[in-house]
Length: 163
Image (tube, rainbow, N blue to C red; front, side, top):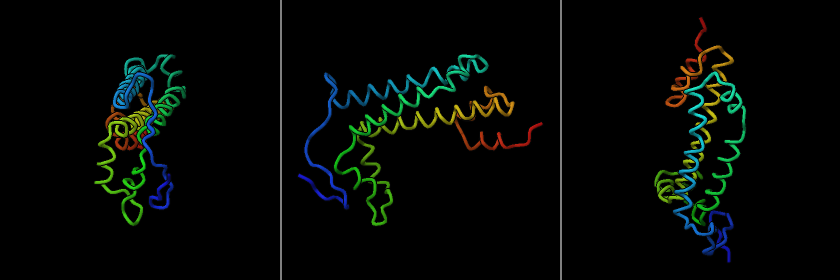
């Protein structure tokens, strides 16, 4: 049976994919922890061994983005409900509204998918800062903390005149 929600056909039902032996909250928690742990080696290398060959090679790798992307897609798939579109685009102008987003992110699966998404974007931005530091001859180990806390501040430092 299908229901028309804001011109989107969404199947109704109680189908929920399950990993054998894990309930959905356990999946969200496990992937949250796995994703967090997966990015730590990259940050550790950038901070503790910025000039090491292993660090340079790992910064060129796409593996962490593929892994995080797959984790994100899986969690997004598990968190999708018939109400997702309605919650995301509740206004008559198809713009997100805070109450709908708050309700959507009260679901652990949705929150875990957002966390994985944030980890992937943050790691990508940190990698860009790290690589830009090498290209511009600015020390990436000095720039990296700015990338962790404020990419706009880092970008302004990168665009300042070089001495």
